[in-house]
Length: 100
Image (tube, rainbow, N blue to C red; front, side, top):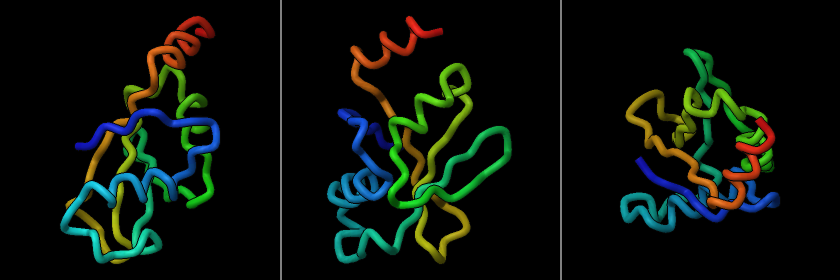
């Protein structure tokens, strides 16, 4: 599991994949294009496009965000995924709570 912080409204899936791979020694030689982020919710899973704005997507989940998992996989990989949870900055989290 990896924690990702400091997302901005401009952060894309491609940016997050790059951040994860830069800290993972086993995947240093692989390209970002070899990986895809998947969004999972209640057994439903879909691939996210590299240009998807991740913070915008995360904010859309609002009250359901605790049930959402983002998974990083290679194109060929069907299992043994790297799970991570997006941790937003406290300021952004407080703003979201006020909106609820």
